[in-house]
Amino acid sequence: MTLTPDQVYRRRKALGLTQQQLAHRLRVSVSTVANWEAGRYEPPGYLELALDLLDAIQQAKRRANAEKAPASPAGDDA
Image (tube, rainbow, N blue to C red):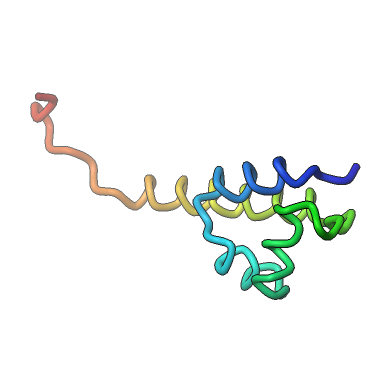
């Protein structure tokens, strides 16, 4: 399934990435990402999978960081 320009934009924003950051992670130019979002170029078929993988990586990093966070001292629930 090919993503629509709006879907590309929304997925990028949901990942909290700029066009430049997404382009860097996908090894494409910033203008390519901009053109996908503007509907000038059709995104490649792999893009949805790549965005899913980026999301999974971010979630794994958040979980790992949460596990590293020090526990609050006992009785400090306020």
